[in-house]
Image 1 (cartoon, rainbow over the protein chains, first blue to last red):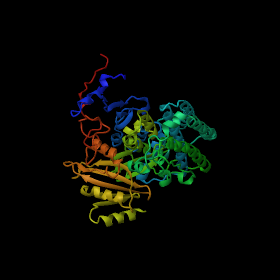
Image 2 (image 1 turned 60 degrees about the vertical axis):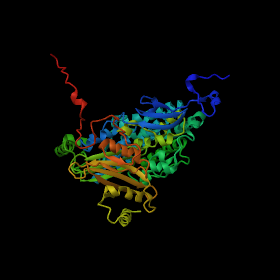
Image 3 (image 1 turned 90 degrees about the vertical axis):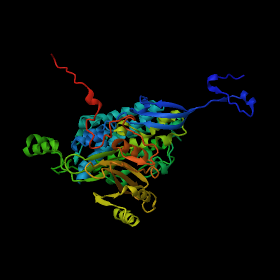
Image 4 (image 1 turned 180 degrees about the vertical axis):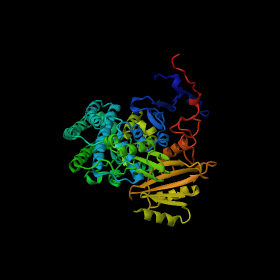
Length: 414
Length: 167
């Protein structure tokens, strides 16, 4: 005779058939489970309330805002230059790309053309940042679903690039190297040398990562066919970056609206077929190879020249001139105390960061401060699709879902 | 597809509906009265010549001195035609509500919630209009309004100043 737990058993009595009293039915109810805000796989502080039926997700409600710092409000109080360090803290894993996206937006507002060399430097550093971002994603995503080794290998190679950033601008993570109209400083011979060495060293390492993951049957089983979204839905939700391209939608701003030195480089945009986590992983790994290709081409094509646009009313004077030349010092002082006078108007400028389309919408009414600055954060928009994509999967797949978007809560909550 | 083409198509479809058209820095921004927002958005989304299938962002701007104080900004993109458009509408503070576009673009759900949270603009027919970045029980107002102080208001002012200087 089977054991019956009285706590989970209710007896349904059908009045027409009192004998049915002897047939117990299992009492079922939906269970609410809080995942986060301190769950290690939520990449920051994210809470999701999961409604469960057994182990299946019926509905999930993301609770955002634990890292909300009011960056958009802060932007209204500072000058355009002063906002650059704030952008580092949006997606703190990939500060360079945030700087890049913001500077591009302000340049569009001010109608500034950046000199050629600066464009190449920007593209090279942006692609290095993309490599770092994808390495970080690859490592942590695999770690979250139990494949630990690849994490160490990814982070070992990521350290090389972070040290390279350190030499470039003095910081590993919060870089602030981009400036409105150009970049802060040029590459040194040692930096170029180290970057070339890395480009030779890196591609075989990508093959290594692939072996670690694709030979791991558990990892493959947990990513293939998980978090599937159709191309139509992905577009409707406004997903971007590898999350969108995993569903086979050809939308990459580097190709759609070419900027910086990208139109001068040859590279391909990998597209997925099934729209699952495995396809998104495959795209990110292919993008590592493409990034190496882009950096190589940029290093070959780059010419000597100025690294800052010559628009004295907007761009900063070179540092050494500030200390030796009176006019430059006045220019520097005026730029940092009052900011530059932006024309009234509004622009939106999107940039293809490694997570997706990172955009800045700036409304100016003239004067040195933005009237309104809105950040289009891919992480935030990806979380909007979380509930839709999670339905019907197991609890453990919720972790894969966090990973599949490559969310960073600093950017999501702003 | 080019900007003049989009504009002429829009003007053909809505000969009187568009209150303001601005073209600046290669971007097209069209302002419509809020009664027609959903209608124009539906045209942009459904018409095969337009095909704006991708929602980029939903934003809001506060203009405290204007009669219609708040501006809601939608930005759309057409993946097939590689074209952007910005659709704007105004709403007064006394009746601060516009039609939700969640039935056309699913992504509008979170973006409109953020606008509601930050600016206090409500959206008609939104499935789940709650605060999203601020706590659910936050009662101090809407942070991105221009009359909201940068340092916040409320509990910070109740802290007593601790005198830690040496005596």
